[in-house]
Length: 345
Image 1 (tube, rainbow, N blue to C red):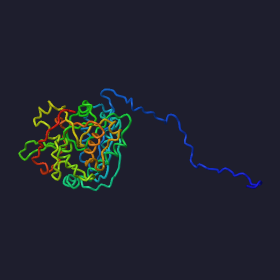
Image 2: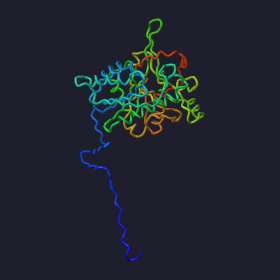
Image 3: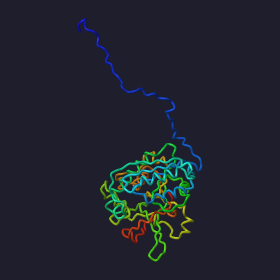
Image 4: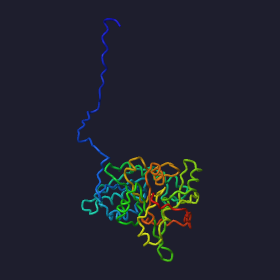
């Protein structure tokens, strides 16, 4: 370095962005250790994924309005995806009516989320309930549930109540009834009404996704490829699992007397689920891939049990689903005789 060289100049940098002014009111402090809890006023999030559901909107919102749990403690959230029947418009109309200032049934809040996943599976009973559609269908439903959950869950929610759109009848006290069990995850039994050819009413079992595992089921899973999704309720997979549907008493009076009897479960369906919000916060969601050869709600139950959470069902507490008018077939005459665990543990 010679004596007449000038010292190097420091480089100059220019930030083209406007300065961001942070004011203390924009900083929110949340203490999840001390979430507020008032008997009968726990904040609840009701979640309903929707696809081609326009025909069910009127009855869905009528039943929702009739729920006896304090409406000011309930937030609603819906995800509409891949619909072709005007579901979004019908939903918007119903939500506007329900949440109008003059409505006596207003809830604390309502959120509508749009998200298409490119799912082109037909919503016809024949296709969506066919065996070959189950893996793709259940992974898709699990993905939609997760998008809805993570968009809507707030720190103040203590419970998440998953509710399908095609329920036709339920006790107005269903939230309180499930909540009083204080379980991590709990489901009622799901049946349907049908009028027979002789005019008599038939009580049919609908949801076979709520079950207790069997030794045959465990042996079958041990032989399956890890990416195979085991669809319960189909003759292609003979699991001999004990379905919650068949644990109920046939006599309605006896069901009523024992409606709060519990049984532990290993898989659950998605028609009606009450979950402690902290279970979801801990990362227990609805796998859109094969988890222990299950997906969606059955995978959710498997994941929860792996993490040490309790999963329970109420065999004699019935919520009624729309009759999809499926033909008798895969489950005709099937009533598993496997031992049923009823110890609540």
